[in-house]
Picture (cartoon, helix red, strand yellow):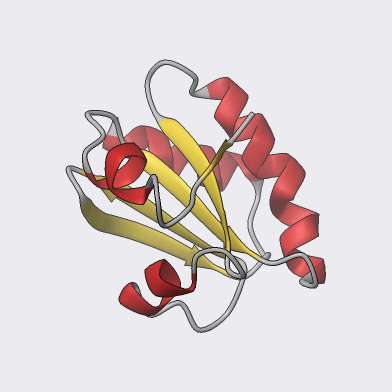
Length: 106
């Protein structure tokens, strides 16, 4: 299961993580976000122990979204050592592509 990322835990869970972290920026009203959500959850289970996967609801994480220039959702940001190393924008993606990008940072 993916972590719930909020403004309160973002630094601890993402920026200060010793593992690569995937953050899925989404919203309740976003159809494509709901489409890729099961893939993100599956990747979370797959990489458990070697990487972290979190979901940030834009309605709860507006400051984070603004900081990283999130303009369309879903947006997946891949962090390592507190920095964005890669991203995927939109829902035209496979579970394998998400997993490969995350594992490439591990």
